[in-house]
Length: 406
Figure 1: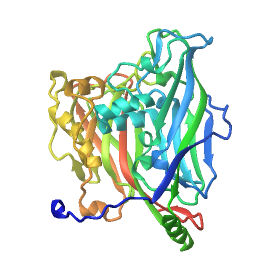
Figure 2 (figure 1 turned 135 degrees about the vertical axis):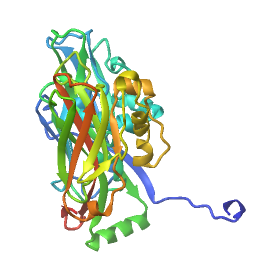
Figure 3 (figure 1 turned 180 degrees about the vertical axis):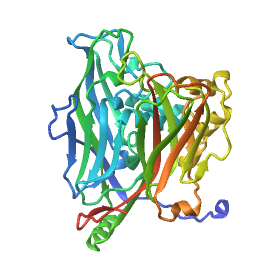
Figure 4 (figure 1 turned 90 degrees about the vertical axis):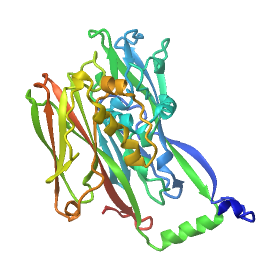
């Protein structure tokens, strides 16, 4: 027993002797407007970098079209992420991970992932789920804002792969959305506002290691060894406008063995996209009665949910939501929402498909299908979102620079 090992030797870890953040700017630092492709390169391949702890630093202004300060418009929760349509991470020119509709994807994921204390820390990133808007983020005198957004908040690779990168060129690519409407909410629908980004940098930790570790890493590179990177990717699939019926059958996607869905998150919105008086970070109750996900012929969950959202009969749905942190991270569940706020702000459906039968792993394509029943016919302009969290495996060779997906 450890309590009896009174002669236990003291271990001091000197494998890492120094870390420091370096800031990297886009190729064109002034091209940060709507529809612009923002490419941030890291060419220093002789440095040891730690992407999982990297973050984006963003400065900007929220103003009216004439440059004056708006008193009616505010950034929504996670509004800065809604400014970007795509986010890609590349290693030696090969795309490792990709996120589309960055705001919606990261918002859905974060509603399940973070507890109250973590949300307090992430206010610095513009994440504030329990407030109706982000008034405190923007300076009321100048309309300016600045945020530090951890990339692990936006993309699965940065959250899961917690190793240094050896001897490779890296690029982060962001594409601005064609408008800023989905990032803000205003009480004056006739007011035209704009968001101007003045600065955007990728801040990357550089790691200096001890002499024994330096020799070991150099030998690893010289041995022409492939390094495997495994992580969970976040893939958002959208159904822009559902039919106005009370029963739906949605063929979402077909995937390979490795990329079989492990965690599935469903959410719905009514007339929110491109509506400046609506909050894109919140989701709607559409009167769900039952939801089933099919992976080929296998269904999840096995039992019917028998929901009645109108009469607050959604305890099973909330319990499923509250178990995400345990299933995904292996931690004690500490959901940020209580049942009332869950129903009001984000009545989302989480379905755990982590455990699968052998025939799903046999190598044949896996067809994912979603069936859901409603209490009544849908309203007009109802959109459905399915966030699929699935495995990805890549390897890279720090000597030959070859990157490939496994």
